[in-house]
Amino acid sequence: MSQTIRILLNGAKGRMGQAIIHVAPEESAVIAGAVDQGDNAAKLINDADVVIDFSSHQATLAVAQLCAKNKKPLVIGTTGHTAEEKSAITNAIKDVPVVWAGNYSVGVTLLNALVRQAARALSQAGRWDIEVTEMHHRHKKDAPSGTADTLLKILLEERKLAADALKHGRSGLTGERPLNEIGVHALRGGDVVGDHTVLFAAEGERLELTHKAANREIFARGAVRAAHWVKGKSAGIYGMDDVLGLR
Ligand code: NAD
Image (cartoon, rainbow, N blue to C red):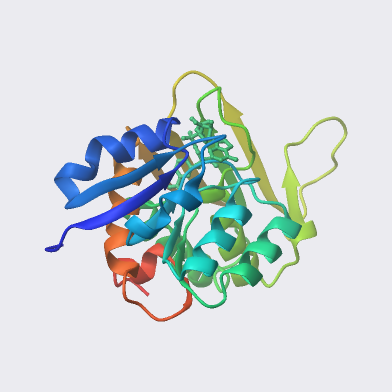
């Protein structure tokens, strides 16, 4: 990370926006523009090398269109996009390089790889039930988290299941748990930055893969690292595993 990059930051007044402003000087980055709801990002984009968006799922499409129009690379940090939003964003960014990750921490990027490896290995090793839990602070607006969504996508792929295999919470007379089900549980409370566990349960043993985030700086540093990496890349959608060379 030698050369300084200039960042246009969307969602600058939020928790993640503030974390990025805080870490930028230590990560060879300058905040060329800091915008939030109601501000005009278009006026500032020419002065930036890369745009980072940590605003809201509803705001990402406009940011993506602005980047496409001005041929600027983009780092998408927002989560909770609807299927329609995802498809419109994907269409808008087809000619620019973009890093789009539900979690910018090194540990969760590795967790994704370990979960894939475990799910693959255990699919040949008798019956293993899979449950996913995540816990976040009381202010979080979407569930399950973007990180949990990525873990679930990996598990569905490895188990060759469709999305209707996901069971969000359980209540009442649910009946016995079928094998081809993945339980998903979103806990909310306090100031928890982000805990994720993938639990594999068999007769007589359990394997739990857990990541706990203690502060937002890990996401902020990862997103700035992604901004350095994506500058000058060819058009495409990349993940944090590409940034860290883990793919
Ligand atoms: P927050 O509510 O604290 O901050 C969001 C900010 O965006 C607010 O200041 C709000 O005013 C602003 N905003 C809302 N609409 C906007 C618009 N149209 N244009 C510009 N700004 C707008 O939320 P947060 O905790 O900072 O999280 C922001 C997003 O990042 C969420 O989607 C969250 O799930 C996601 N997140 C992702 C990661 C990751 O590693 N990918 C980590 C943490 C949070």
